[in-house]
Length: 350
Ligand code: DAH
Image 1 (cartoon, protein in one colour):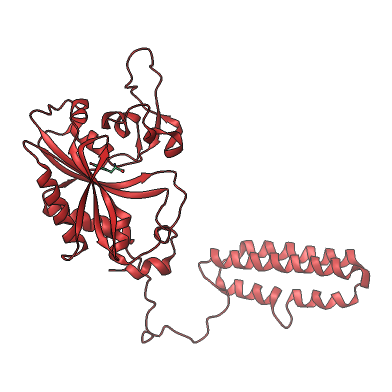
Image 2 (cartoon, protein in one colour; image 1 turned 90 degrees about the vertical axis):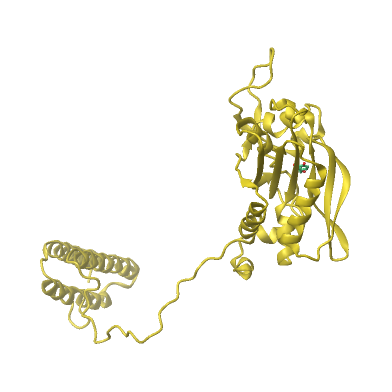
């Protein structure tokens, strides 16, 4: 048989099949068409397939390809028609029915990420000490991230190599006075101390807040560093707030979160926004581990938000959330928290 004859036989069969399948109105009629074209014994496709044997050897590959295309098109048209008539498969359903005694498929529930668990736990502890939760933006201007926190223009903390300055976001209101009215570049905040400023700018005194959230620094990731991590900031401003209260709050916090047996210590330190400043360590695995910084709010900070440092005093602290979380859950590599490996994370299901 010649190839063109074979091809035109297939084409007219396809045309006829598609035309009738477009018009078919009942599933019985559809079933008849299915048998007519694809029936295993005497379906039209079967008989054309038999003709393949008489095709010239050199034309066989082309003929086989054409045959497959036509068969696929007919099957697709059958499926379309079946769907149009509201049925799933056009094949008759065999005698199998639903067995209500089989155990069900249990849906897989997610678990709460250990960092989220830690954030909730910290809020709960600090809430008992009377601290309200506040939030601040992750994209900050230089006023809130540096200037108002007494971190001047030439301070190394503002180095572009130590911060994620944004190429596009600019602050809406240039704070700088005089001739320089160009909006400054915003950055991904490098610390949650920004929220201290936002709160003191907008909320009435006295205030006692914490703010938890992400901060960003361009550190190369290793077991203890990651370019994004979380901090908990605390701020208490009132008449006559003292360093003794700061120490009590941090000690109460540490024993509540890490366990009654934890030892903590305060080391003199320096931060531009507190005076005096301390670093706070806890004793873990035979060594002192730093868990944050703290101090009495610097009068310059109060000045920048229009609070009179003679009338008010306050303390502030900033703690690393990952460190607290890792100590509690026995996690030794910070990167494990952010690999999104469910096998790892689901171990901390509550
Ligand atoms: N912002 C500091 C940091 O990221 C931590 C800090 C230190 C916050 C002392 C404070 C503070 O509020 O008083 O390294």
